[in-house]
Image 1 (cartoon, chains in turn orange, red):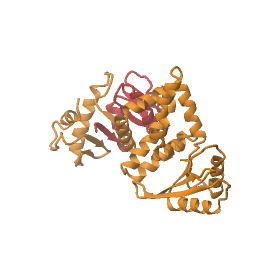
Image 2 (image 1 turned 90 degrees about the horizontal axis):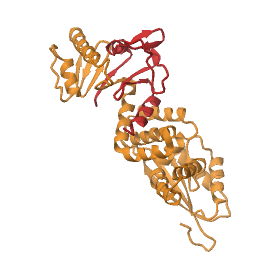
Image 3 (image 1 turned 120 degrees about the vertical axis):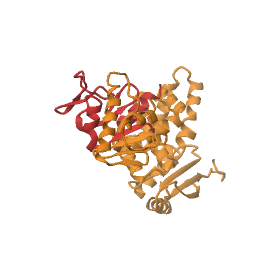
Image 4 (image 1 turned 90 degrees about the vertical axis):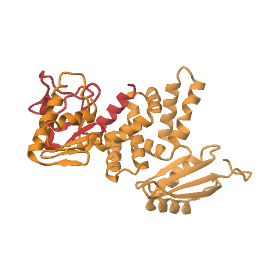
Length: 276
Length: 76
């Protein structure tokens, strides 16, 4: 049954007039009912509609499914956000689930839904709630995955490696790709993500770790927020290395209006040319 | 959106409409079966977050349950 059909039955016998075709959601509170833009507070009408809703739901008590979702209001924004993501990226998420398995796909789904919420400028409270959940449920790799997705490394650099793994290891490409992804989560050779908990000393340490790698073409340092950006700039001023590099900075605003910076250290080869 | 939302003040109404009964901390259906979540763990009355389309999937009131639900239905 559609929501307009459900609503029409819920309103039967009530004096309330609601355009059922424009109302796709019903919120039931203790003493009121919201249907689309209409809030019904008259106790008699609320009682009538509640009786109708209860009757309609009870019809499905012994069936396999209810015709609609019934969700606590605290979860509805997250539900809608996840629904939007899984509709938009269904095929790619299905492939990722096939590779990563039932458990490992979860932080990816949650991180992607946070990225979508940020892109769509959803309320800050929702984004904060989702980030807290990500950190709580996936303390080791949740935030790392979100960083990779936000900086577009996930879709542009990591996902294309699935095809490379398939080509090189057709029989066990899933295992190989999981190994590759694990290694990226442990250490991303060309990128550093700086947050509020990354001190200057750590930034320098991370740059040094990467500069020790042979043939690394560049290191990109990502930061959002003025204090993080200033900390990178201070660290780079103090940084001394026998390896020569050029520094390029790209300043921009995030979709939520925060100042962001991507600082690229382009490594100069011994013959003076840029490696990238 | 195809959803009924409720809050703590209307939880009892939802339990009644879904034919659920509180037995101490737990919820049972009209056949006296314990209401459980996606991992077959019982859902306490204070944890109840709703029921989703599909095969009457009962969830707790937290985001992890939603992530699990959307992960499960990817293959459907």
